[in-house]
Length: 272
Image (tube, rainbow, N blue to C red):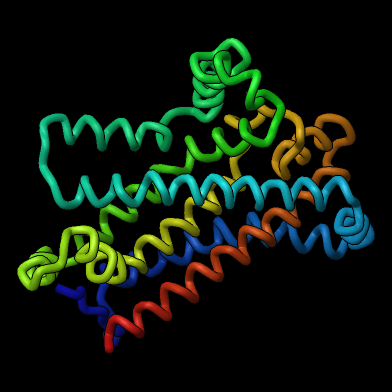
């Protein structure tokens, strides 16, 4: 059942209070971000231009986007099947599995970085045996693994909610007409849950490219955007790091604008 959305037509104390709190929330976030962006533009626009023209800065941001994209691809491969199983089946230990999947969201990301380093480092459970074939420490695979670990829950949970929103009777109807399970999934369930999966993938990508704590412990080099920002702040202070921060914010803002546009587009499609 689709929730109805009401327009505010008369004064109600509860609506007024909630609207006021929404306004406070909006101000808190928008002032914090816009203050830094506009101060950079008006106080040191030349520094922003230099950051845009700096090869190291652009390379680090591109590496963030690329590594985040790879992490999102792996998250799709793992998260979509996981979401389907969690949405469609009950099995012993299901609550435990769901809780473990959510752990990367709640643990400090430096803790996640130590855990990843323990497993994928040169002497780790996986990194040790594979060291002759693939390098995780201070290498792209390590960045991807760290990004994947902290962002995978977003895709798995979004996919699960998407599959839950699809009536199982539609899938059963396709199977009753002779379609095997994989065809019913591919041509019925997956398209109907595609909106959730797509938004989950974008959220996963956005979360991945914003990661710092887990990445810096296993792969300080090559530097992604957040690592370069940290390095510039420690080495040269605010004046050198703020332009990079502004560029990262603009990239993230663009991603979330895409999320909202896609979400609005899918909503219009669903209504029809």
